[in-house]
Amino acid sequence: MDATTQNPAKGMQSAGVKYRPYPQVNIPDRTWPTKTISKAPVWCSVDLRDGNQALVDPMGHDRKARMFQLLLDMGFKEIEIGFPSASQTDFDFARWCIEEGNVADDVSLQVLVQCRPELITRTFEALQGANKPIVHFYNSTSELQRRVVFAKDVPGIKQIAVDAAKMITDMASKAGGYRFEYSPESFTGTELEVALEICNAVIDVMKPTADNKLIINLPSTVEMATPNVYADQIEWMCRNLDNRENLIVSLHPHNDRGTGIAAAELGLLAGADRVEGTLFGNGERTGNVDVVTMALNMFTQGVDPEIDCSHIERIKSVFEYSNQMKIGERHPYVGELVYTAFSGSHQDAINKGMKAIKVANHPVWEVPYLPIDPQDVGRSYEAIIRINSQSGKGGIAYILQQDYGLNLPRNLQVEFREDIQRITDEEGKELPSRRIYDRFIERYVTQPEGRIKFVDHHTFADPERKGVRVVAAEIIDNGETKRIEGRGNGPIDGFINALSHYLGIEMSVEDYSEHSLQHGSNAAAISYVETAYPGGKLFGAGISTNIVGASLEAIVSAANRVLDVRAGKN
Ligand SMILES: CC(=O)SCCNC(=O)CCNC(=O)[C@H](O)C(C)(C)COP(=O)(O)OP(=O)(O)OC[C@H]1O[C@@H](n2cnc3c(N)ncnc32)[C@H](O)[C@@H]1OP(=O)(O)O
Ligand SMILES: CC(C)C(=O)C(=O)O
Image 1 (tube, rainbow, N blue to C red):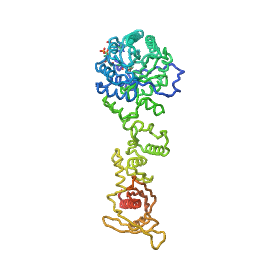
Image 2 (tube, helix red, strand yellow; image 1 turned 90 degrees about the horizontal axis):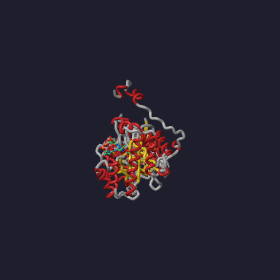
Image 3 (cartoon, rainbow, N blue to C red; image 1 turned 45 degrees about the vertical axis):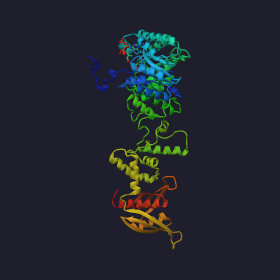
Image 4 (cartoon, rainbow, N blue to C red; image 1 turned 60 degrees about the horizontal axis):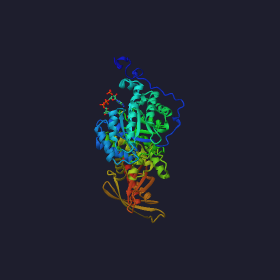
């Protein structure tokens, strides 16, 4: 009988029968919860090994070389370049890195090998001539693997590690200049006392010193518990490992429960010095820990992460080329949509936050809903706000301001939002910036269907009334040229009186604003005029190189909209 037929419970109810909770770590005086991350760990990229071994089609030379160059450019000082004893491709790549890779003196190449003599011998062949390479050897130590994979007890498993440690120490002593890393693979499935016993046995063989510290890497090969449990395990190991001062304690989290980053961050609080992970978290099953996200998490806390993520689009493009995988739209810091707000209240807050930073010229980044300035990773402000049926007036105003330099007055924002909302509801999809602008210009400025067109005007002092101006204007009404005349305290007042009289609708100017649209002597200006009429208020807008002309155009625009409303249109 298999586990399913033994289990009478069905579906999710089978949980308590089929799975067991992960045991807690007995460390009541844990110190990590009150700590913070205040400096970058030593980073080691394992993209070319752990990432590579999880790909459908593992990388050939070109894909590896492109990824390798990126990792060097980002400033990684330790790079696991492969498993040279496992394949000729990996062996040749190691030789290429050493002979032609232009690796700086402060960068260590790292390679992985199992605790098997023939593989260790081949690994040393691959590393000949390398500058301070790291030989990373491992064997699996978990209770489950001891039982079902190796059929060995703890002393037997420890012996595998000790034998490999001896062989590696001997081989390295002949050549000199090597560094070492040992991993009790499947550490999170290993009883802590057993992991400690095996690591201490390896430490005893390798006798690390201050000049050549041993890296003890404690992988969550499979993530099995909440991240606080991993942190407890790391703190417990850091307290109990022999010769701790000559060790570099390293983390290598996977992401089976989706908390790989949290586990790595808490593991650093718990005393680890180093993190192995991959760009954007590629790796076995649900991935390795994502070092770009971790680094940028540090950055947004004011800590220099010591790897350069400022050109995230390049990192993404190399990732996608070398791994032949796509990055999701919501992936932290890099996804296409992560700097974009569609929802109205978020857009409003972002719009106000961006303005506040500009006005105050404040060096500290404080914009609601944006934990990082997109420009710090080489992204632009262009996509911050996009419009769909969830959007509000603030977002629409932001787009028109940011992309086209239009500063709509608040009441016009409210009015125009209703129009845009109608369109996005009808169409059920995003409205691109250009369509919003075109809609605005058509509705408020050009009005191809508008009954009245403004042509020209001139003003002169009323010979009969002191302080009063007469406005004489030419308009086109349904294709026919008309001359109208009105009086007022200035051209706007005089013109609206003339138009009111001509149309037989009592209109007045309720609100007026204008701004220039571009710099230079031929600068155009835009005017926004809110016009009151019996029954409500409506905006019009006008664009002209002449500011008075722009205002009169805006009044005609508002009048056309009043005529439309009276005619039962929109
Ligand atoms: C969690 C991790 O990511 S660990 C890294 C895993 N990465 C890889 O395995 C990718 C590269 N590996 C390979 O290409 C191959 O597995 C090779 C070339 C290393 C070995 O190939 P093979 O020997 O043909 O096959 P295979 O991997 O199945 O060998 C398993 C044997 O190695 C033993 N073994 C596995 N890991 C180790 C280890 N770390 N130390 C010692 N022995 C080990 C197993 O017990 C098994 O022994 P058995 O043959 O007596 O049953
Ligand atoms: C070899 C080890 C470190 C590994 O890749 C893992 O445990 O995930």
